[in-house]
Length: 193
Image (cartoon, rainbow, N blue to C red; front, side):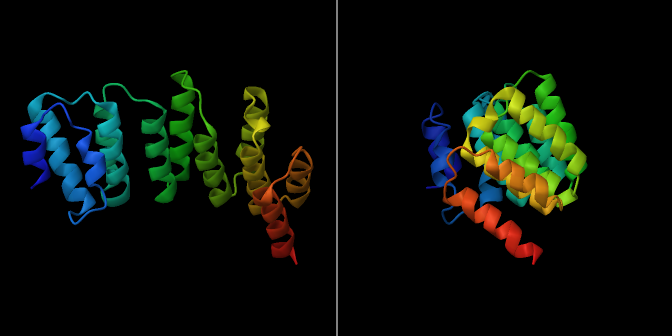
């Protein structure tokens, strides 16, 4: 049964959309249909479903369409912001990703480890060590540095930006390094040989 008919038969279950992702229907077509349905039905308020549609737009659609949907989401949460920032990073629009991150912080939304990973990837890909240093300070001030994965992401960022000494210092600051952090620092040194 097509998604639209399933939604029409029980309009309160718009979350059905997320369970149809990855099936025979192409994600973008399904996302467009659900988006259209939500607008027509007046149910364009379910942030969970809209975030799923946004994620599909990020994968399959143009940046303009993705940005437009993001702008239309009435109650954006951290998942909405992370999805759009990741979309810009994946498309190589690093400056825009940094700007979005700044806007997110201005809205007083606290970033999480996923946000940090996305923005650090943007720093690494654009070789913006100065921004990386600022992010490191931000991580320490906000307490995100207590997480071994955040520390490992910092190690990786420093290494990819060409600052092996900072990568080593970031690694040494990890109280209990795990497999990820060890692999990260070993990879850093292996690439330098």
